[in-house]
Figure 1 (spheres, rainbow, N blue to C red):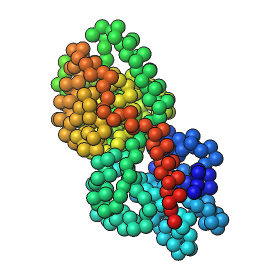
Figure 2: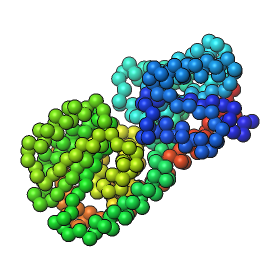
Figure 3: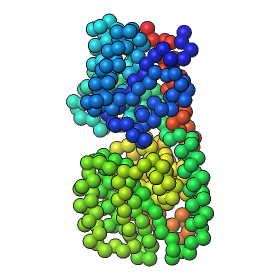
Figure 4: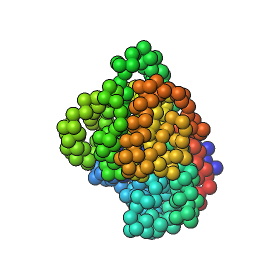
Length: 369
């Protein structure tokens, strides 16, 4: 029976590129903390990475080495699936263990993609997901067990946000009412599913005093940026002088953590979310309130007195929630529920995820035949 994973090679496959916010990449880095001599790789699906991946897999097969392929997202799942078929053809299937994590809801996939995912279940050895609600949905679809592993951010990042936000909030307490500015932040990928334009639509409908100063920051990059900038220029023409909007683009990790620690109100506009790491980050600022779409996965994880939910993809519902929170801020009712967290919030951290995954890998290798 193996005592560690030093004789096994672990390969993470992700449709998304390596970045400080890519969860599979971050888990890969955290896993090394538990075993410094771990043979572990991360590959995103570009030509250069894929060539390296094929080269490494070929060498491992030739040397009869044990391999765990852990895929994330649909394209990498497809590669994992076909690699499993190849391992059977080469009679190497006893060496290859296939693992896959579901990061999103079933509703995101077309009928064709659902068929592909369902077919893959006959060869993929093990599935896991990032919320218990996802676990129920995917198990119901696949008729196969799915393990739930909470994710989040590291303990170090949590402490950084918490301590810095307390320091900044103390300074803010000395401001006069007329000098206060409510800081609103939207952060994420500028893609259709993240729906950033919805926030601009909601801001146009705000019901607040002209004396209330609001600063809105958008952070991130993606395909919708040109369209977003066009909509932003239209917004500026409305001459809403008490609302300032800044688009900051993609930012370094430390800069993002500093933004989080000084945020009063985080807003999420996605029409589909499975976990939402950004919400996990902002909740570690005990003085930050959150406005989230009414999605079952999100309510399961983040429901508490600091989080308000609005109707998905509904600008009027979102605008009412924002207006209420702005008015509460300037009426000094904003900190009423500061330092309140969801019941199981401490369970959602990346260090624990890596530890749980390491233990599961080890048990897998010991039991796999």
